[in-house]
Length: 212
Figure 1 (cartoon, helix red, strand yellow):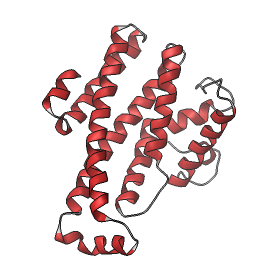
Figure 2: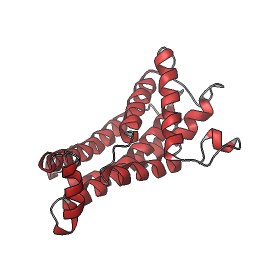
Figure 3: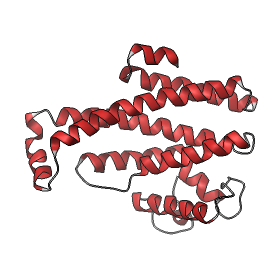
Figure 4: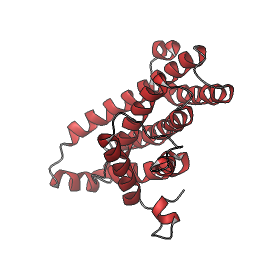
């Protein structure tokens, strides 16, 4: 999905457009913390829907991870989407039926982050250990990056994302059991929970998987 500005005849959607849209929403929320934006809101509802649209978010996350693995420092859209998920998780807890769609779309984006991020991190760990990556690593060294520290960070992130997926699945299943969703929302939430656990399974020790 193109950004609202693109839909109105502006330039085609780009990573920078997406970051700008995220920043605009974040700025409004900072000014109006008492009201969490909803799709039904006239001012920023359409923009929120565009930002959380799973197809658009997935495309932007792919660009983010590609740039990050090339040694660039793009705006952390994965982290920004994680912050939005937290915001809508809190809003859903207080007013579940009002924020069901927004919350579930956030979880779809969280799933995309894990689905794209885990293989990307795995590839980066492998690249740091291969001769073929020597030229790229030398470039990073010249930029002053500590590759040993980078590898430790990647390994840590690798586990954290897996654990986060399992934790989100557990929360979703509890919310389903507590009848917080509509009938349609509960079915969608169960599908998301199942996918999150499938994503998490290869990256977690067996005892953690059983908890989910």
